[in-house]
Image (cartoon, rainbow, N blue to C red; front, side, top):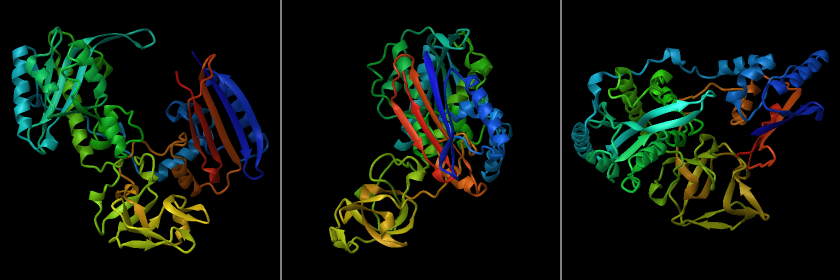
Length: 482
């Protein structure tokens, strides 16, 4: 059982004082609503400006509640939505469909072995980078009165999809394996083979389920697989790798993949699959493979340069020397690689006075600085670290470690998972930039401090902080986990 504790602090930006602060022990939104309404009444009675911004650690869960409780937030949201590029709504997207000629249902062991071998032979003729199979599995489940899964059967259906040729259409096999104690021989050999990469959403859990149910953990332990969620995140297509397949299809293929519960939770162990079941199963793997090849054409933003990547005249992004470079916003500057001289003379007063060119350093000319506070390793002035902002106006020349460079990506990538939302502390800087255009005076600052802890233990294991202070929105989020 969990207990939520919420501390809400209201500041006056004009006077820098705390105007209101209260603490709520709550199990839900209903216990926060009364003090929030009392606060809004006070603001109205004293003629203060209405609340325009709010930050929370769970925007998806809190959005409707705060829009209902603080209606002026919705007004600001409408302004932000007007500034954002239009995002296709589900109703505007074409519904994913597949002709029955593009998938085959196999029931018998002989039929499964024969068709799996045919697919494997087709893949063997393709270039190595195109030997990709999308994998998924279906099984029966039961839920309790709360909608939680309390029972699951063994794997009843395994789906595989593959390309017939490079750039060609994707076909699928829907393999009915319910009741089999072991995987058909040729299917087991395919999963154990080292030359093919498997992909899908949450594919690791499907592989583990198949391995457990058919007692083949040893034979498929080396199966190579790529999860589409982290793959999409590494290309900044989505803001989190924990994303459903239908969302990936929406933002990449611009299609609507229907995931009807009546089919998804149907009886997959039935002796014969219905047309709806077969079509659902085939579409899951066909669209997953199409998403994979779409993402595969995009640059992996987590990849830093190596000495082999350096080329004179190449446009690059400068990134922090440590940590993840997944998010496009972590780029610190734009630069172009120059021919490396024997050494570079550093600015007056800096140590060392010269930097030698090595296999791990290269010379660049910085054309635009986005993060002036980024520290340049290896250079100090008066004993202090030197940052990009200390070099003055662009362009200027730097000797940088090669691992601080990555492939230039023109921002932003035009796939938007959601329109800009007020109730997000994940991108406060972008939010501040948008709001600065419309909110010249922000007399109120809202600071939400939320802590979740297991009752009786009070464990705190993570912290997220966001301070877009010019607009007065501050969010401290303390999260505790089981």
